[in-house]
Image 1 (cartoon, rainbow, N blue to C red):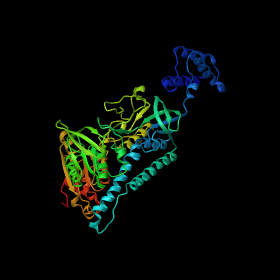
Image 2: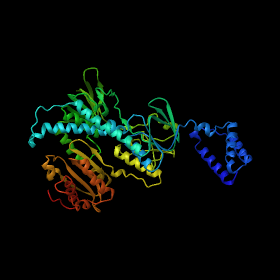
Image 3: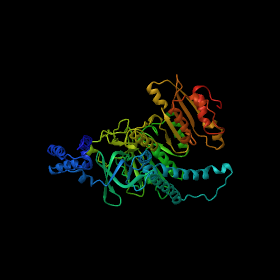
Image 4: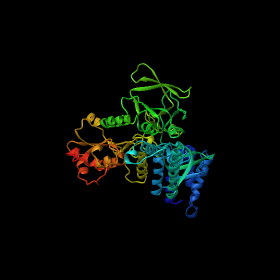
Amino acid sequence: MGSQATAHFFQSARQFHRIGGVIGWKCSPAAAAAAVRALREAGGGGNDAHRPVAAAVAAMRGTGGRSFASAAAKVNEEADVVVIGGGPGGYVAAIKAGQLGFKTTCVEKRGSLGGTCLNVGCIPSKALLQSSHMYHDAKSRFANHGVQVSGLEIDVAKMMKQKEQAVFGLTKGIEGLFKKNSVGYVKGEAALTSPNEVKVQLTEGGEKSIGAKHIIIATGSDVRQVPGVPIDEQKIVSSTGALELKKVPKKMVVIGGGYIGLEMGSVWGRLGSEVTVVEFADSIVPGMDGEVRRAFQRTLEKQKMKFKLKTKVVGVDTSGDGVVLFLEPAGGGAQEQFQADVVLVSVGRVPYTTNLGLEQLGIKTDQWGRIEVDDHFRTNVPSVYAIGDVIPGPMLAHKAEEDGVACVELLAGKAGHVDYNTVPGIVYTHPEVAMVGKTEEELKAAGVEYRAGKFPFLANSRARTIEDADGLVKILADKKTDKILGVHVMGPNAGELIMEGVLAMQYGGASEDIARTCHGHPTLSEAIKEAAMATYDKPIHI
């Protein structure tokens, strides 16, 4: 056997030793010694160069070692990258991996791609938000524009059908993108059986093992439960159940004053439900800038949404036609009862890592159940990575997508990176609220000297002409350098307008940079320009 072949064999042997768990190869010291002796004695070269290796493997088998061939037979498929989870983080990671030349397989147990976001979250909720907004406008605003409507009715079934059509088209679109980028798609529940192997319980029955150089966990998150308030998706619903109601409830209680609860409360409130939000904290959306949050709550109250703050739910009774909630002050005190037809539990989400096999591999998680990763999204098991809602950072679909792209780029030796300081947050109520960067409260707590510039949509010509002028733009910038530290928008199309602030912050821009940039007229974006002018100097139109 030539020196080159010998070196190759020993390199392979070292690799087999390191990833022995992958193929289940149990090699005793005696087996290893037998393999070395067989290698020395077999000799050979040229076309017979494989014979020493075969002799060594046979020696290992004879002394109790398992051969690679027998172990590999259990692996049905090999890939460079296996992505567990087909949500926004997972499917984007899979597509990017395909684009960069990795042989890639994505495993998803739901049976349709897109994860919670596309199937029972972001997308269907926006469809219902739009439908309910159109009804609300027809009922309360059309007449002022000279549009007379009579016989206005709600058809909940048709609203749901429109929502489902949007979801179906988008999920099928992802499957098309998988085919375009040569990404394999396996339907089933995956678990890690070793650092380089995933076993899938197939949806259609049976199981399949996939070997991989790299495994990316992108399993997303699940609804956080409230003790004593069991979700049945009929009377007590999660956001999933709130998207499937067959009729408009007369009274709805939303437990939790965060993004999802306020959005779904808005949907059913516009359609006629009496909505009450029960929140344990002393304010809604606790991470929002205080000034903006107070203006936001006042606007929701004008829309007849009610709030019970500093209140906790300690139990429910569903034995009757509706739900009786037992409420207490958050700080303790007398209990009261509150009745509703439907209760929406919306107190946040938790990482979903059930049955993944993390414990068996020793993959570390933190006290909140999030998988610990380094700056390259790598877990403490070097071949296993994690992205999206299962790791620290904002639990947002667009953040998961960025994680996915950056993770795969790093696998390919590129410079992938996500700046969580410039990930925007958006509440898709009406008006919308969007934010990026620091709040005024955070800057004060950190002792940062800053300037704040504000501009109301009441002074914006486009907002006035479309009769949609609730809200404001608020920009926070460093007092000395004028570098933008935070942008907050409450108003029409805030989710689109915020991106000007995101881009400016991404490139270290100053408020003067935005203020001196020509904005089209009349546009809502002029409110961003005016707020920037108010930050470093003075606005024109107020």
